Amino acid sequence: MKKFYLTFFSILFFTQASFALVKIDITRGNLEPLPAAISKFYMEDPSKFSAELKALKLEKKIPELISNNLKRSGLFHIIDPKSYIQSPNIAHVKPTFQDWALIKAQIMVSGKLVIDSKKRLRVEFRLWDVIAGKEIEGLALFATPSSWRRISHIISDKIYERMTGELGYFDTRIIYVAETGSKTQRVKRLAIMDQDGANNKYLTLGNELVLTPRFNPTAQMITYMSYFKNLPRVYLLNIETGMQEVVGDFPGMTFAPRFSPDGKKIIMSFAKDGNSDIYSMDVATRVVEQLTTHPSIDTSPSYSFDGKYITFNSDRSGAQQIYVMRSDGSNAKRISFGEGLYGTPVWSPRGDLIAFTKIYKGSFYIGVMRSDGSGERLLTQNYYQEAPSWSPNGRVLIFYRETKSGKSEIGGSSSLWSIDLTGYNERKIKTLTDASDPAWSGLLSK
Amino acid sequence: MLTKSLKNTFLVIVLGILISACSTTATKTTKSTSAGDVYTGTDTVQYLTTGVADRVFFGTNSKNLTSAAKVTLDKQAAYIKSSKISVVIEGHADERGTREYNLALGERRANVVRDYLMSKGIAKSSIKVISYGKERPASKESSALAWSQNRRSVTVKSK
Image (cartoon, rainbow over all chains, first blue to last red; front, side):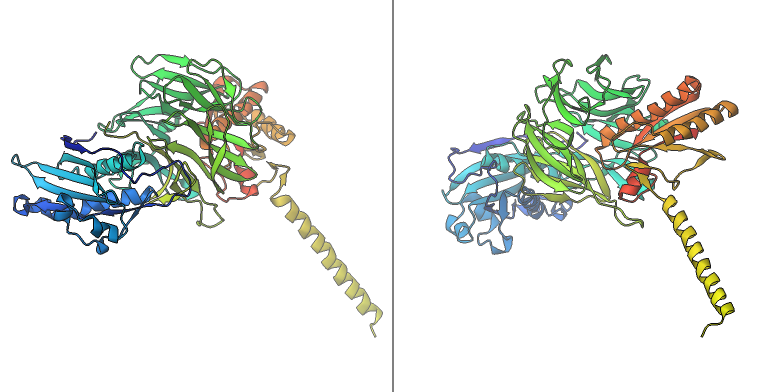
């Protein structure tokens, strides 16, 4: 990742028996959010903290970030800290569970900041089951003043994991296209941010049109499409160095790129004489393989989580539908059979589902179906929305919407949205500018 | 009681109004229209030279050239041959589709025009092709009319 050297050690891994009385089942819809109290952390021996560190107010900021993450997941209800009775230092050592039960908390998170003998900052947290009256989990992490946000996200993931049995998705980043300007003179730039909107950074200047950026598995490379020098091609961008290079040596437009799950290949469409087929290229050897040879439009390819299959969009049946084929291009089978047009298929990292965009009777839908096409479920409907991307735990989808535009400058604005697999917790994601084409990274700490 | 001359003047005036009214409505209907799904008007159309429109329009999800399109392209072919220019064909799609598919659709539309021009004797080396998908709309409104104006292939003189 970037130069914040996160020396993180998980020492002191106190994991108690995992028979907590409280547990969240995130596959059920219409969940009652679990009431949680996130206590302010306390600084052990504040005299050891530098003025610069104290000014960061991490004892407040870290639990705030954790609260925001858990709240945004829709699975937790964070109880107002003003109602907390017990002070942070006691809560972290031996909480009086009645005090927490009184304000209706079912779980409580306490934490401590310590400067150790080697002048390193150590962040400890403990997750308590208020009803059972015991500790569920405890962890310590070393941090630097610049890595506290990532520490907060990692702690959030640990809490989420413990309570749901699923991996979290808070220590992640989102790549997207930042848009400005009128509809007929749109300026587009690649932008990257933490999943909660912080640390927004632009990766291109906006001089050329850029579209559909996607991460590689380590989140250190991006593949995207650019109209640099008015030649629409797929490119690779190294986030750390900023170096960009065109992918392959194709004599025509390449577009719709994605990485394979092992990061070794890029899969994309190549348009030749008006026909678009799917090709893959080995990133290291640059060997190119043609995967579809059909006179129809074949595009939007996406690998399955194990790299064995590819789902893609084709109009070989006469209209846009979703297909699945083996990763060598053989055995292509149509899987979408409902009414309307289907596009942008993307395979879940959990392997069970394919998310897609559906167009039917003038409306756009984000939906999911099983990889054999069964169990089609539409999650949300809108005037215009498309291009879902999965969170790394396969539980949340991010996508974008655009509003209608009129004769004047009003309308035509694009924004990022997320929704849970259950169809609940639909929310708008705040960005500094208009935004489109979002893609979710994997968990940064793996 | 109206005198005869007054009656005649009155009649002339009424007829005059009726005739002028007719002609106004006639011009209104030809301005911005669509036949089926394909735009047939002249708003947004530019010209390579006098009388030679620079673009043709398509139906939703279609790459078919209408007979009106072929008339335009015949004129383009004649102009390209006589002026010996090189051209770039830009293919576009409307906003009511997914972004990646629209890039492919734009490419398809641009190539259909290229193939037609080649069939009229234009050398392959004089024609380049580029798709902009739905990224460069000619009309920024969200309406059926605007969308039909955006489903187009535009022939541009090469620099």
